[in-house]
Length: 392
Image (cartoon, rainbow, N blue to C red; front, side, top):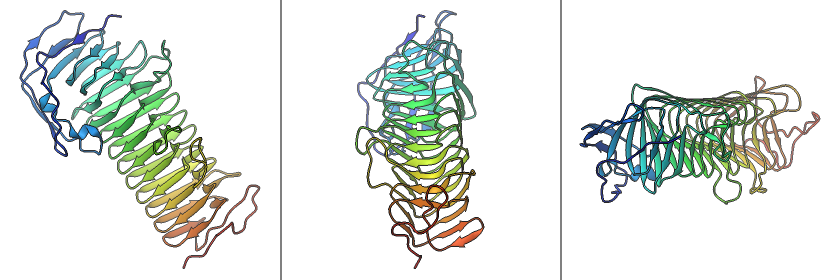
């Protein structure tokens, strides 16, 4: 399929980096009417302010220094080879492909992308890519169930850094594998995002950071995931805000190196493991977990084999476990609880191979408050594990 390559009428000489400021889109470019079989591009004089100060490098981009192009999609699809902002509307059975060495912002302004060939949005190369959901719009994305390059395994796929922001709605249906995939760092700042996938829901390789938005994931595999298990310090999943609901056939929230939760609301409707990583730190947030194996589990990965621990310093946590050989909080290393309110319904509340310390907060197990951690071993045997201590 031939794809239309759109080049804006004028390109800025450079990208201006303005640390910590809001990016403002201001354009004044001519209109080009393509043939009926191609996309129609129109760039008009608009003024749209978007804050992307999320800790990602995208927050430093002055988008007003780059051109803006409005695109009415057709089944030709779209290939973006120049930096800038692209405001998309309409529908296509083609692909949106990004291949540039600059910064690209894609504003979804009421689009339906139903790709017949691979990923719906595929970023092969870009300095940074921002997908913005325009205010008041509903956007739908689905990918093909087969493709020639199976390494491109997301309905939305980015080989470089990707940020999703905006106040509109986005529905992603992944028919091949995963819903949203970032091969470097993936940030979700805002928006109402619903992902249904035949494998994982949302996956960042080096990191996945959620700071806001309303996110609903229904995945046959893992829900939210960070997968780098080869580079020390990567494989991080951070949740600092947002309203997240996960239904998963495997782990709901998973990282190969560390999960950090400092805020937000997380509702794990069903899972095998609710939250799993070698290191898990919960400082705040409202978390409810339904799991069939472990609710919160610190387990070794290919790169992190020691220092395994679950640390809970705050938050409001509810864990309901399925019957059988299950643990609400399980660590192949240590468990440390210094604060928060934890309400557990389970045959085994805690299981740890190292030390278990309860020095603060409120821990309720099957309706009764407890003041020490008990290590519940496989087979139902109970008793104090190594280092288990009473609250002072």
